[in-house]
Length: 159
Image (cartoon, rainbow, N blue to C red; front, side):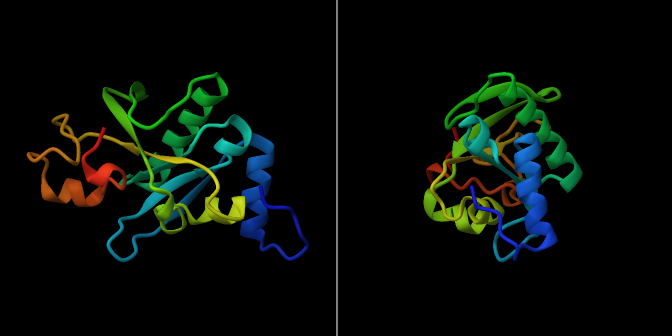
């Protein structure tokens, strides 16, 4: 994790404080280019050896609550890795985890890359289904749903 220096902005200091105090900082990124808005964890790898987690397409408050619940599960000993499906993180819906390719980390987890001073950490994308239980890679999924939650790993084929 990045060393503290006197030259940090208040926002940068907050990232490091959150990670030090609770093992988690949740960073939000606005939509940019062909990527929708997303949120990601910072600190899970540092504290728990759990890959950092990225989620697209949820309001900031919902994404933060989801990542905080996930961090509580990690703190209790659960782990979430590429290719796994889990029940219980979202009420009434399963979620899947897909590895984020290392070459995409700086683009989609910029705060984590800043905090780790590079991309030497693993990350997974938390993927959630639509109300009909379809995943973004399902041919029957609505175009808007798939665009709201692009799957970065495995060529978008999902887990």
